[in-house]
Structures are given as C-alpha cells and as structure tokens.
Length: 639
Figure (cartoon, rainbow, N blue to C red):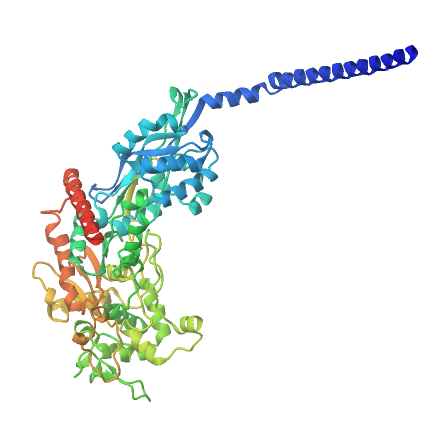
C-alpha cells in the first residue's frame, strides 16, 4: 500500500514538472514574440509609424485657386467671386457618416438631396475633405459653433464661390458653375480640382473651364488631438485662373434683352469685321445663381416644366425655319451657279406649278408681282421667283452653295452645345428617311421652309458674312484673356467664301437689302439717321391646306407665324449685323422694330450715352426685392 502511494506521488510530481516546463517554454516563447515584435516596430518600422504619427498632427490642406473673373468688352464685371462659409467634413475623423449628417441636418438645414450627395461623397472620398453645404448663414455658423465639441471632423471654412451680378441678363451665354457631380468626378484630374467644389456647367464657364480654373496650392499645418490648428508649417500659393474679357457689350445686351421682354425669341448681333459676338440673348432667361450651391428640386422642376422653357438656349440651340431671311443668300447662289443674272427676269402670276403637276405653290401676294428680277425679289420678298429658280437649280446645288454660309453645320462659336440646323439635300433625305427627294421639297426649301432649319446664331453669322462681302467669319465671344496662360484669339475673317461672281455682286445684294428697308417689306424701320440694310422673314408654324388662306385670328397664339428680321448697319460701312426671331411674332415686319432698337443703340447712342451696369448696392437692392417677391408668390401659392 505504501509502495502504491509512493508510485502515485512520483507520477503526480512528473506531471507537475512537465506542466511547469511546458508553461515555462510557453512564457519564454511569448516573451520572445513580444521582444521580436517590439524590435520590428521600433527598429524596422520606425520610419513608417513616425510618418503616420506626424500625419495625425500634420495635415496638408489644399489651397484652391481663385477662379478667373469674366468681364464684358468694356471691363464691366459679369462673373464675380466672393467668400462664403462652407461646411466641410473630414472622412478620416468621423466614425459614422450617417449619424454625423443626421446631427448636421437641423443645424445647416440640409435637404434630402444634400444629405444623399454628402453620403455618396464621403464613401468615395480617400480621406479628402468633403463639402456638405455652401453658403452658410451667420446664424447657422453660430449654431454649429455651440455644438462643435460634439461634431469632431466637421469644420467651417471660408471659400470663394461664384456669383453672377446681372442674373438672367447673361445666363445663356456665360452659363454657370455648379457642384462637381459623380460623373464629372470620375473623369476630372483630382490634383487640379483639389479643394475645389465647383466646375463650369454651361456656356463660357464650361467652354473655358481650363483657363478659368487656375492651379491649386497647398498649406501644411500642425493640429492638436482635437483637430485645431496649432501653427502653419509650409505654404505653396495657388495660381489664379485667367480673367476673360468677352466681346459682348453690356449696354447692347441689355437693350436686346429688353426688346424681347415678354416674348419668346432670340437676338444675336455680330461685328462683321471681326466675327465678334456683340450681343447674345435668349428669352425668357433664368437666374443662374441658385445653381451654384445646388438649386432645390422644387425650383428646378418649376424651370423644367415652364411652358416658355427659360432653360432653353434659343440663340444657340433653337432650330427654326429661317423663312425669307435666306433669300439674299440664295439669290447670290443663283449668280454663282449661272442660273440667273441681275437683269434676267421671271413672270410671277402669284403662284408656281412644277411642270406636269397641277399643285400651286402660292406667293404671299395673291395677285403676284408681275415681272421680277433679282433686286425686286429681295425688296418685295417674291416667293415665286425662288420657286422657279430653285426648281431650275436643284436641291443639291442649292445645298452646296448654302453650306458655305454655315447653314446645316456648326458655326464653330466658342460655346458648348451648338446645334447644326438642317440644310437638306437628296443624300441627306435618303440617309435620314430612306426616301428619295421630291421636287416639291426643293420649292419649300427655297423660301426657308420644309426641312430647312437654322439657329438664330447661324442666320446672324450668315448676315455678317454678307455684310462683309463674302468674308468667312467664325463667330467668337472671347475677346482676350489675361493671366498665367497665354491665349491667342482669331479676331478677323478666316478666309473667303468661294464665289464665281464679283465683289460688285455682293454690293448689289447689299443695296437690294437697303432698298428693302427704304421701300420694301421692311419700310417700317426706315431711318434717315443712318443707312440700314435688312430682310424680313415669316416662318409658318401651322401648315395651311391648298387653296385656304392664313387666318391669324382663328389660330392659338402658339400656332401663329414666327417673325424674323436680319439687318446690318451702316449699310455703306457695316459695324453690326444681327438676326432676331420672335416665336409666334406674326411676321418679320412686326419684329423689325425690335431690331431697330438694338441697331439704334449701337450706331447712335453707345458712344455718346452708353448704358452702364448698376452699382453693387443697386444690384443688391434689386436682388433682395426679387427674393421678397418670390417668397410672397410662394406664400400665396400655399394659401
């Protein structure tokens, strides 16, 4: 029994000893691991973690450049920069983005769209600060300051943002900047846009984005554990964007805008000596300022659903039948093709029928104009003259001539989104409709109807080239640019329109247009103060059945004819050429007096008594009154 107890004791001692040895080895192994890991962190990875430690207290903050200013030709400011308070969130300093934005919503009055955009940006951001709200009020900043200790990772910064002091006056040509969206963020250079939230969306702002943007700098700062700045360590200043001086004239733009007040239409005016665009108006227009920080869904929907389409750039993208405004260009085409001379004539009984067809294409004058030469066809706008001669010439020769004036293709203006219009041909119809061209379609195209569509810009550009006696012009809005980037602007004709006639033919066509104003279809706008050349046009909106007469009183307002007028002055030394269209404006003779207002300002008033912009104080007062009126309207709508 004693021997058995001794044997068990020995076994227990052996087990205990083995356990102690095992535990010792385990502890020794653990200590060795700790020492090894410590050595790895302190020696091998020292530099890596030292940098990370510095990054926790040293931050590199992007210093966005000042966006270039935009001026008119006289140096009047059209696009300004001003500082605003901006709410910024640092993704690496917040634990829960959703919770953070929930806390910020009542403080900054974030809309659901802003919350959604903020969450998307925070998820995609690689530790780059994300702008949540632009244009904070002083009250919002004060409310945030009270809660700042509970909102780690959120800060208020002062940033420059855009403003357009003249609101809707230049909206369709200057455009606007807006918040960078997801699609744009995927393609733009992140380094160039570091610290920048805005990008050109439309107009000149988009066209010359690279010039206006500038180059960012940076600022290295040291912070404490709470993210507060202790001191500035290093700074690389940003390079400001180029300032742009446009060819637009503030006074002329204002006169043109007021001429179209209450109407849907467009006016484009150019210098026929250089191709500079002097006025570029599409009406109705809109205020671009709300788009900068992000227009509300309600306001944007109201603009989109407005039947007058204020967002629609009629001058650049509106495609209309140009009607009889194209007769001077078509007439020169007859000379070029050898189909007619200035002395050859046709007889107009008031209609034309294609040989072998009984259908009558009516002239606007039911009784006809009798014997008609090219000069009379312009002054009296004789449709039958162009019916007969276009039938002789054929659509393809007409097409090849008219495209020389940039009809049916882009003019090349320095604005994004230009439409090409349509100058048809047999090839175009087969390609577009898979059908052969019909002779009657040539008759329609000959007086600017049918498939023929043109933008107000194209018609103004063609008028300027006629005023320049066939010099080819590419319209442009940028006059000059100053700043870090050197920019050359072509400020002259870029060639000559191929023409088999002589310079005398151009002069005779100009004289015919001058006589149109003196005694023809545009005699309402005749003036003795300067020589004016012009041509009216009436574009049919609703087709009239064969044998029926146009009855304006029986039509709704939006089914009435469009009114066109083209002109240049002074006729003996053209300094301005323009095209105006008024949708449903009843006809060219009704629209021409509006164009006279624009021409009178440029020729008679501009130098002696120019229209200048209001002061900043006056603009602020006007803006405040508009905002009050808007709020009052919204309150009445709610009631």
